[in-house]
Length: 140
Image 1 (spheres, rainbow, N blue to C red):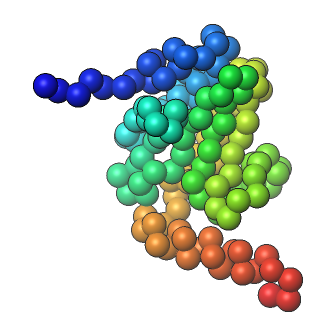
Image 2: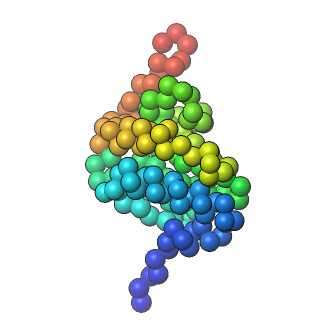
């Protein structure tokens, strides 16, 4: 017997309507910016992941009861001149949206394109992350 497919609609059905709207708008921006990426709803992670044929997993949306995070796996490597990316993990950065009107395609699209322009090898991206961490240390 075939395993049923878990969809984005299945995922967001557990959340209030404003969260559906935020996920839908982010989804539209991601898929219009990168139409060839693969989208996958993840039951266990309660998220939607986006994979590019060259770069692999580069971003995802994570809905919560009152906000949605758009995360960039190697967000620490993305240009962020306006300081809009949040987080202090070693590599992940995110944008958090409490309402649909806060979503700016003009801010998100360059981040998506930059994420897709990172080196295709995961090891190369990890190496860049490590060298950036080293350069952020005092005395480096």
